[in-house]
Length: 244
Image (cartoon, rainbow, N blue to C red):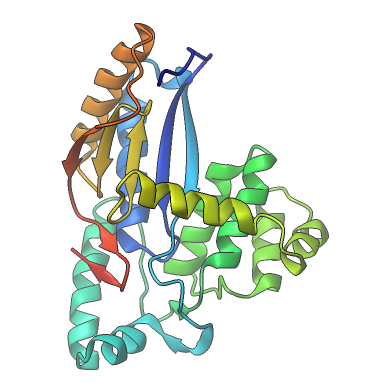
């Protein structure tokens, strides 16, 4: 199967707002993109993925407590693991506060992101969701919170509320998740460059820059291979809550 050459080369990113490696991977990819000589010819599309579709909203519990209970860890060990993640995020200029991170199902957040994407604000929505969850301790499972986040990025809060009160964009979220399964995504973040090269995990910026260069060269030659993508691997979060 082949794809016709479009104005920009597409990079698709499967991600979950609750995935700590996804925010780190986003920042590293952006660092690479800023160094890439053809950055204005790259189109980024965010795709939905849920690490734990069964997770229930529990605003009275932080993610340290949740991980300790789910995995049979002590609370101190859960904090130790997340402290290491916090240091990794800090190296990318990100602030993580797991003591504030609220346990919440991310499905509505993905629907919100889908709505924002249709208004040309997909990247802005992802950035705002990550910051709200990891830094500010906002409940991303609460629709009023999502409406307020929408207003922050230039959407109408009432319209966001109406979307979330319906089932709109639910099918799009499920389609992204099923597509991830079909192409063999085992964890997120997962980056697909021009449907030819894949980068799995929050790899160093150099890995993203290399993938951008290779895939862009092929895109310019109109050689688009959709199956058997070449994949390199880095840290990911996988369904069930394990980050490795």
